[in-house]
Image (cartoon, rainbow, N blue to C red):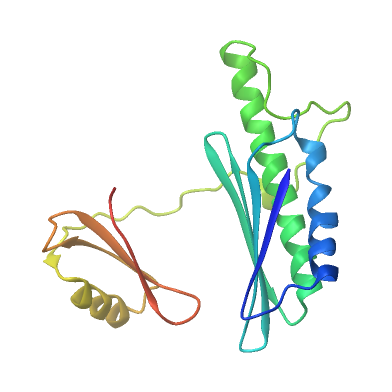
Length: 181
């Protein structure tokens, strides 16, 4: 794997880069063939909180984890643990699917010992479904509506584009917009 380590509001030192590469290299054991894509790591400091975000593009999916703490090295450790859990869970599902469909060579290496699945790695359970009518509005009105209901996101029909959009509140307190491609 190729490692792409960059910093936002922080200078990435050689020691930090080496630590990230050492920790992330432990994930390589899960892959059958070396990945040709880059493993992207972003380190940042905002209001004294050290954040690490890692994204691993795979065929058909993107594995991503983020962690914020008071210590950069602790954030790196937690992110790697999160990614390892995601990979094990995804590996189990992908390999099961390939075996059932046609026996295609697996994306992940098969272990001799079965992987223990922890309780927090079980399938996500859908506990509620909501249905509502989308009111056409502009982005500013959608942000206002989102803040009025106290949610971190809001789905609306964009009055300008006539498409379904989502506005959301970002971790830095600003807002984002998700548009249909």
